[in-house]
Length: 146
Image 1 (tube, one colour):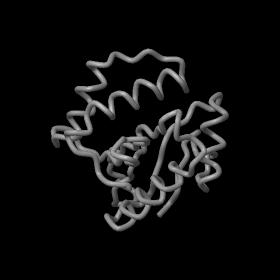
Image 2: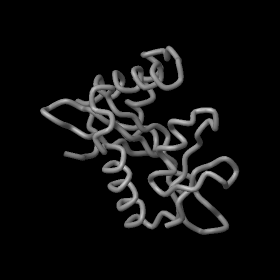
Image 3: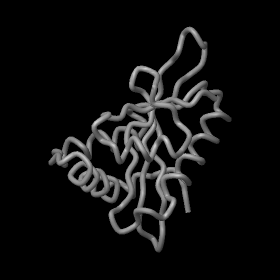
Image 4: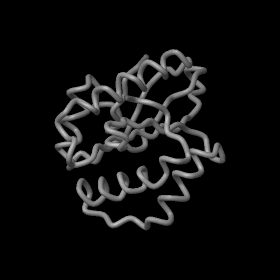
């Protein structure tokens, strides 16, 4: 099931974020900083949305989106800030499901594009986003015009 995250998901979101940073980037994030950032989105103190995929009552994948206004398009751009899947649930199509949900909601909300930055040395991530149909040739930003 895909749904918007709620405050009771906070610990699971932090766990997913720490795991993803360690696994994909080799980074050890500060859990308290990550927790405050995620909490800001969940409580509405910061602008954005977080979606979760829940299986068996456990959060197994997450995606966070923030917004930017595009003056030359006169519409918002949705930025995928973080997308991750639990190691135990990789290669099950969860990224595709999350992306389809977010794309649908972005389009319905009047967004003109979905964007995310990916380090071009992270070939695994680049291949995953290219497989979704995103184009990484625009300023090293993957973007899909809506």
